Length: 394
Image 1 (cartoon, rainbow, N blue to C red):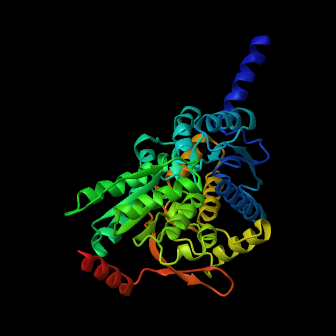
Image 2 (cartoon, helix red, strand yellow):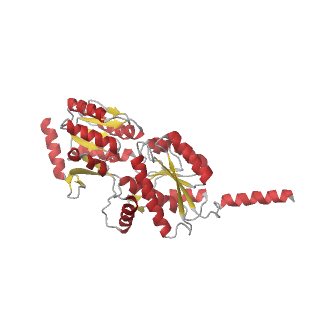
Image 3 (tube, helix red, strand yellow):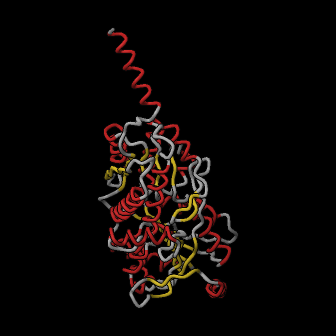
């Protein structure tokens, strides 16, 4: 009799694993974000967007009539802390998908765990090219690789504007190295290119550090400066360049082009050329209007690009449970994501778990009456004017 009970218990546990513990009352998803530390502003924006996404999902019946439940963990933006929180979410909370991380360093540290525990990872913002090479079947991201953005920026700078002398300035982390190295690689394959110096700065740099960098850039007299950093430090460097009256054209990668931080720089932002993701908070489609409206109500401000990707990441994560909570079903649903209509644009995962979305190139024109930054697409007139000024100097 005892052996029979043991056998029945074994069969019961096995069936629960095969059916994905169908007795669970909620769809459990984890979220690993930097809710404190240097990247907290980005992490909190994404956290707020996830809450909006959960509200929308549950208002429409949840997933298979089960409410979506998200467990948030603070990574502090540190790989070790990220791995600790991932293991806790899987072992203690029983989550089946994790949204995160934000920085590429943390996401890269989580990728092996996603494969080990067979709990997929969906990053809303990590863009390092290394994720394509070092990721696995359980690693996905809704934010495009830096390789894609680097191609668009390089084409604009080197082919369309004919810039041949520029100084890259990049933060010393996975993001800064990833995108700047790709642009430098393309630049060095361009005829007559001159890169007098590559400047890299610490994530904890102060304004005096950025002022010293700005003075060095002035002494080098480049035609253009490329800033590859996060919003806070990009804004400080813009202010420093403005203070020393730098004459170079300034390009800012998408990670540093958050409008609230650019707006805080005042006149220093005028004329800056930006790479920006496709998200438009003023779009009139029903999905975007619902997201922006509820985000403003819940979070007290207009959502930016990172929030949009966070909203899409949680929506895709939840819909992966549409058939069952079995790990193989969840993974299959993620691998089959094609032309998902997100607020950040159409999302299709390729065989590496990457998306292909090219940013658009904008230029800061000034300020609206309400104080918002006036940014429009780079025009043919802009291109002709910048190219002519560059060629005249030559």
